[in-house]
Image (cartoon, rainbow, N blue to C red):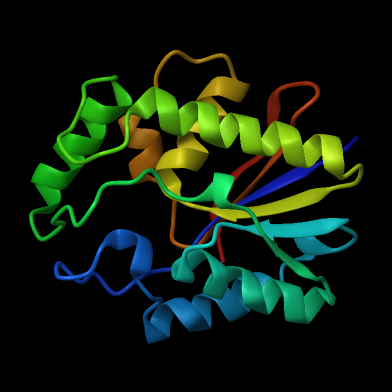
Length: 186
């Protein structure tokens, strides 16, 4: 079976003055990324590909070092664009994510269907380019969109998205379109 190992980035420093695409890992996030890199799930993969965002790259870097992998960057794995959307109101942010998952446009956010097409297309392209097991380091919302598509679901379940730890790993069989190992943290 060919595995696709999905990785959600480690905890970040929330900065309302900085666009989310530029957020960095916290000290705790860097330590969590180091712990994550030691998981057996990363052994024997062909390629490690990450989103270009600093939080994803910093999560992927220890996996690359520990496993001796070259780290590739793919812009198709980036998070859904949401400008400098504030996250200081957690309930308000979660309500926006829920609306967005449902297809309701959120001002300043990339359209859900555009983000979904981008992540699904990026994964398909990478699978065509690379024949072995792949590790993809990305972000909670777009990875949730990818899994919903893979599993034939019309909508991302908000509770499932909220339950994904930072960082987290899930393993899918993209050919059989099934979840092999559900999200788990380091």
